[in-house]
Amino acid sequence: MTQEAHPLPPRTPTTDRLDDDDYPAYTMGRAAEMIGTTPGFLRAIGEARLITPLRSAGGHRRYSRYQLRIAARARELVDAGTPIEAACRIVILEDQLEEALRLNDELRKPHTA
Image 1 (cartoon, rainbow, N blue to C red):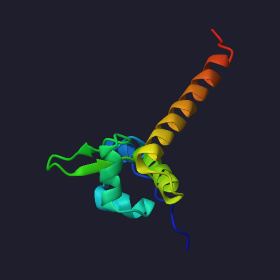
Image 2: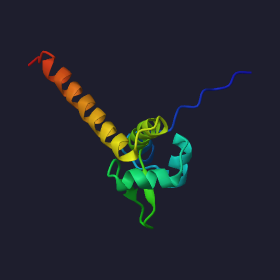
Image 3: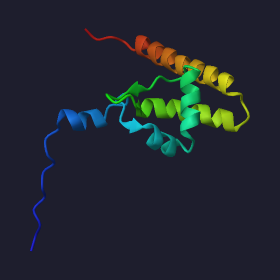
Image 4: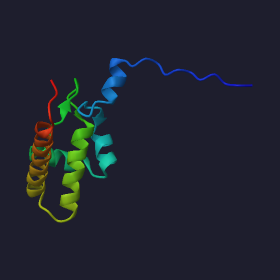
């Protein structure tokens, strides 16, 4: 007896958002758990303006995957002994450098018209 393969349901705006790196899908508790830190650490890097979580209709902080990567990098630096303010500045500069390098690569590619 063979099983028929069931096709995947069509993509919806909800499933598309889950693929969006900037969609604020995670609560503070879940975000802290995912990167192995505390909600207090997330609040501290928010106060240092490293990341600015979106707020739900009820006022709760919500984080995106991109913000979690940034927070995880800051946590690595803090765990290595870097003061939180310095760690936040380092992460901001690393992120800016990565974006500048990406733009340079894009501009160097030959354009076909």
